[in-house]
Image (tube, rainbow over all chains, first blue to last red; front, side, top):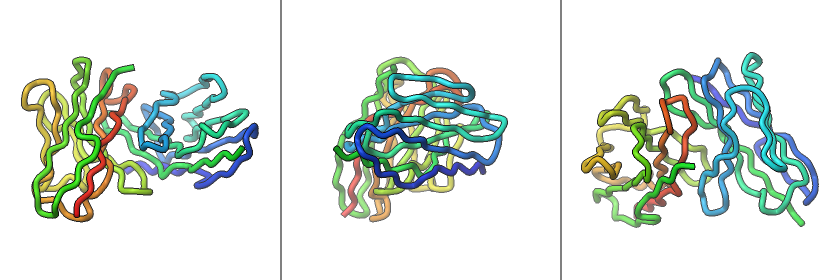
Length: 108
Length: 114
């Protein structure tokens, strides 16, 4: 099956810093999503981005499907950005497969 | 954004007991999924359900698991004889269109088997 690799596994930032999270996938995909798992365990949708670039406030994402990777940018990080960020992909007719996530800790 | 509500939020059960986890999608969706997340690990796919039948399942979804949509609204996951290793967060998800459209997750049910 398709492999999803996320890097870095852990990231520690000071408030106000910028960061880039990466998601590599081993085969072509029909869908790619980024999620934020908050301290209560909820999976919050950030982006549905099979290709191209999207922005939502301080967050933006870019997927280059032909090169099999996606990037999530967090600018001016805040303590509330802490948590685990997951990338998930699926291929035609199959369910989402998740990467192992990047654990982000933002300190004030 | 579609709402997906799961009940209960937490459940503690004795090993060997049966548990039923429930998912109530607010809108009328056709594609449903169950995922689980063992503490500290990644989210793993269990099963997808479309048009009242299983459309895909993973290796994890063995004979102790079953899914159904008994009343056309609730979507349930049954674990027949729970084991300690079934302790995890279980998520229900829906997609708004076909399988490859955006997925939305419920808040999860934390299952603890003792």
